[in-house]
Image 1 (cartoon, helix red, strand yellow):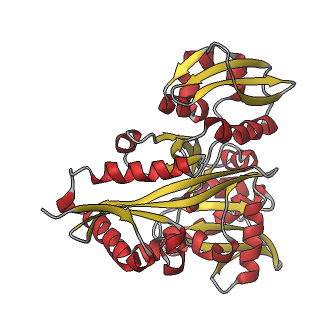
Image 2 (tube, one colour):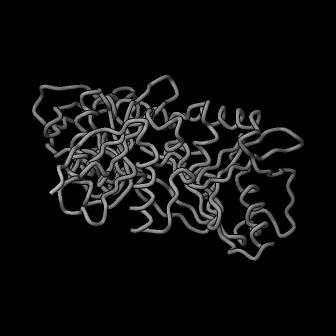
Image 3 (cartoon, helix red, strand yellow):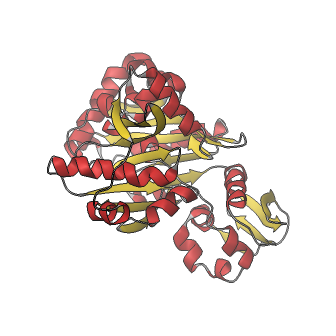
Length: 391
């Protein structure tokens, strides 16, 4: 039996790591080309900025996990440092050997040692709940059909907006798009030096929206589905016109006459516009999160909620097993979280606490929230994760 060695990838392992991930994911799903799908992570020059944990048998890679640095930024300057987990792959003939458990343990140990505040990933829920990840946060997913536009804007509607594709060489337009992204009140950091690689991930196609040469906004969609993974406008009410142009183009080429577009719970202007004409709206979790430092992670989202709407005065003591006891409080409409020595009103596991603080379903059914006006006004906190930033 070959010796199993657990280690971290070096720069010379780049090709082997990418080939391994392509093979495993192509075996399990559709054909994958990670260099094309996720250039923000797998370009050779970016490779060593992440950590790839490997299990090798006889010198050959048999399992791999990628851990990628993230920064969640907020208006006002707060920054949360985290790691995104991706490229989780085990060779088909090496499954059930415990490799993934060891590699996930290595990754999480390093995150804690390095002071990371959170981690996130996509994948099958129960598989990753064993490692402390769970679905949480909120995304509002709207479906817009051509008749919604026609009845809202009129059968003969016209617009001065123009849409054109944006490519890597269009640096001036990319700077405008990046500036708009950075003016959001909550967003994932996108490195200016590789901004195009980031927003074109997952085969994203970028389009600038202009009027008489003036930049008005942008959207990102994926070929095939044409669903909009991200849209932002200087004047949010004009999202309707942009989606109308997209649906008009789809009709011209014989594509289906509907488009999907998402918004986060803190994007109230966008939600107000979309809810005014969309055919339907579906609420879903934002992503899967593992909160490594509850106080630091929760603080900026509490501030974001307080800035968004009035929070009733009150306090609540929450004990999170293995993480501490915290007082959630509000006075004069300003909410906060602080470490506490008080007797808890409620004790939860770490997974339960993530859902208690950030999940809309828990807010709808948890008795402690239902009985407390303060918690009803505070929770769920507005955690969102844009598709473009997926790992």
